[in-house]
Image (cartoon, rainbow, N blue to C red; front, side, top):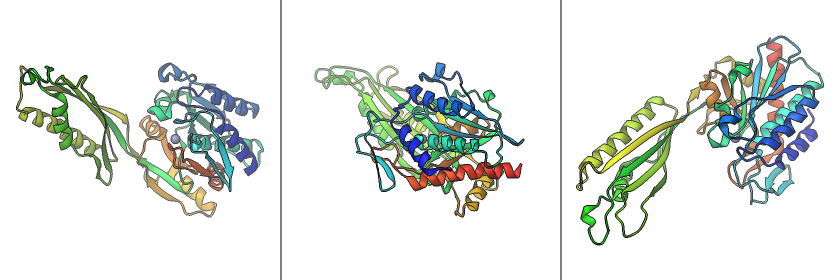
Length: 377
Ligand SMILES: [Zn+2]
């Protein structure tokens, strides 16, 4: 590999803004690079559903030896703020002036795959058939991955480049559900006839005070993230809404948590002293955001990555993630996926940075995985 070429390309990518749904410019820039290298590129039709300017970009790299294909994935979009970034590169670290995010999440992953393709083109070693997937709208609910048509892929397993340390293999991630709780009370003039009203905000507050938040146990979290309700200070509010999310590596614990919320809401509403007709009432909805996965270290994809790292002389460790990524969706669709680190740090903040030495290491690991895969075929 060529570290200077990698750094230069990474820097180019950082200047191409690509907030979720506006990934078009970056996607075409990348497609041009892979096409110039002679690899076939196409977009799927996920844009109809994601609302992005483009579909997911898929690059097919025919192998030089027969083997099971392997995919690599990076996402095209970034969180904000990302307008007119002032990129600073000094002492081997890329960061911004603190006004915008850097966007190493996930442009580091993209840069790694571009450098990898250039190395493959130089033909120093045989390689298996590869598929590179560049997804859209990852940051707004893994939408590109959700609407990816997997029929377009030959690979059944692969690696998602979307985590921190190149020496940590993420082999598990939690499930996540969001919840929506609506309390219906009754409105009335707050000064003249408050006894004719049922205060939905007061009732919601009682319920929320009884619900757990934060870390529930070592593999489960819950957050009440948003509340709304009420219109004027002199009206007893008839509507109050709370929204939040819960995550766990255990499906059973999530189901129990949902039951607990349901039970608490029913119990507190039942005990509430004010009742008029069939009010107060409530609506409670849960919706899955992403599905948990766990791949044991003894699995051959885990072994492939671990051995590749060890061949580079590194100690490799396995770890469960606390967030969701495209890997959750791929695993749910039956595409076995692990998450690899790219070196990016403090992502989703304007303090985001990446050390170039880690970006280089992550690229070395990807190339070593490809080499090892071809040797094992
Ligand atoms: Zn990411």
